[in-house]
Image (tube, rainbow, N blue to C red):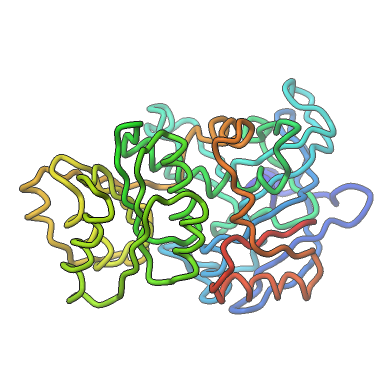
Length: 366
C-alpha cells in the first residue's frame, strides 16, 4: 500500500485524537465513509489534514465499474487523488515544512531506483504507488501520511482548492512540455472536458498565441470560450463529418495547426487530430478513451506529423503553483460544484460528477 494506507511493517495507528475517516470504494456504486488507519510517520514524512479533494474521471470509472484501464479494484480502497491540505505533524528529518503549512500533494510515489526514475522520467516508474490506483489507497480522508518531498508549500494567495487543482493542471503542463508549446505555437484542443480545459489554460500560459477548441457539447464550448479560447468548433461523433469538421477547424485557426492535443482518445478524435495538424506539427494524445484505435497514420506520416503520448506528469507542481501565484492561470472557474464530507454528500458529489452536463470539477471541502 501507499503511505496513506499501510506502513511497510504492516503496523497502523489511528490518525490524531479523533478517529480518522475516509471514503472507501467497497463495490460498484458503493462508497462508504469508514475508519482509515494511518501508517507510522517516517522521518521524511508529513501527516496532513486533507482540506480539498477533486473528483477525477478515473475516480468515477472505478466507482461505476471497479476498473480503469488495466487497473482493477479487487478489495476495498480509499478513493481520491487530487488533493491539498494543512501539515499537521512533520517527520524528524523534514526541514522545508512545518505544522500549519498549506500544501498541494503530488500523488505518485516512485521507486527512485529503476532505469526510468534514474533517467528523470519517474512518471514511467513500473513500481509507482499512486493514490487511488489499486491496490494503493487514495486521499479522500480526514488525514493521510505522505512523503514530504511530494508536498509543495502553497503561497498565501493560492487557496487549498487551487492547490488540489494542481493535479489535473499538471496533466496540461506536462502535455505542453511534451509538445514543446511556445509563443509561436498554434494549438488545437479536441475535447472541452476538465483535461481539455486545463490543457487550454496551460497552452496559453506557455505562450500559445491562438487556441481553437472543439467539442460536441455547447455548454462546454461556452465554458472554453469564457476561459479564453480564441475560437470554438462544434463537432459530432459521426465519422462521415470528419472532412467538413477539419475544414472548419482550419478556417477557425486562420493558420496552420502546429500542435493538437487529443484530450478524448477515440478513433474519430485522433483521426481529426492527425488530419487537422499541419506539416511538421505534433499530435499529443492526452485522453485515453479507447485502448485500440483505427486512424489514418500514413497521410500524417507523409506530412511528418509527430505523435507523442503522455502518462500523468513529472516535476510539474512548482510550475503549476507559480502559474497560480502569478495569475497566469486561474483554475477557480473550473470548480463548478462543492460538497462536504458526509455519507450523503460523498454519494451526491460522485453522481454529480458522473452526470457531466455543467459539472466540470466537483470539489470536496473537508
